[in-house]
Amino acid sequence: MEREESQSSAARDVARVAIFVRGRVQGVGFRWWTRARALELGLVGHARNLADGRVEVVAQGSPEALARLETLLREQPSTSRRPGHVEGLVVQQHVPRDGIAGFTER
Image 1 (tube, helix red, strand yellow):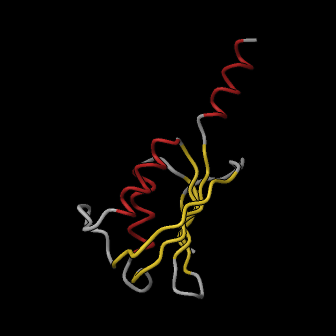
Image 2 (cartoon, rainbow, N blue to C red; image 1 turned 45 degrees about the vertical axis):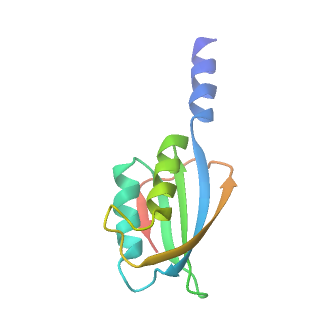
């Protein structure tokens, strides 16, 4: 019984978000920077350019690590040398998925 409780507790400790980043974020190393920060925070997922000029960041991991990534993306001016300029973020909560490894640029 303890094992089941431990597994369900671990599942609750994982969250998934999609963050849509608006601003001068394409062609400036923003996805590479985001990938590096996500890996430092122990997150999995991806960052990809969208046709409308935004970058979509899909990340999964602990709620604390996701909150830290959001802060790093939102911070103005960036204290962590984030490339480009972020004008705004839209954050959507999603159901965590199994089988995701690493963090990629797409």
